Image (cartoon, rainbow, N blue to C red):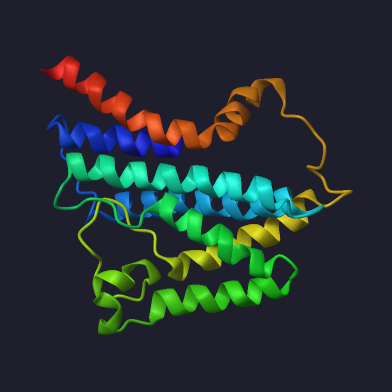
Length: 217
């Protein structure tokens, strides 16, 4: 829901209906960070849930193929709309890579919080011009943010994914407080959004922009 609000405001700004400074305003920068943090925590928790009994290679590869195609579609679509600032490594690209890296940390428990702290600190505190090379942007640790509409590098965000991996173990291990409980009727629509988050992520912006274009033209 936060993502829908953020992107609708972005589209209002894009069409000149509102004037928001998404690149400099602390409110919008913090809002975006909150949304990405929630996304990636959920990715980490979901990775634990989908592998807690046994890693199913076929299912994992199928999800990765879908994610890879979706990330490629986002890159292509953003290039058509924003050719100078198209998305080379956004949140879907990160999720694709982060899920693969996360497999190496499934066996850890509290130790994942230690690794998470190290990755977060490295991504937030370490900067070097060698990472400014276009082929290394995906790692993070650049001395400046690249000109792109969405940028979610491995560092520091993989640290957030490991926090999600830890939270998934804490919250959903039997007998956990959330284990096996269906959503309350009043929140079932939120659960539906969560189960179909990738589809919603892919279609909401084209729908928003097309609707605003038709209304405002």
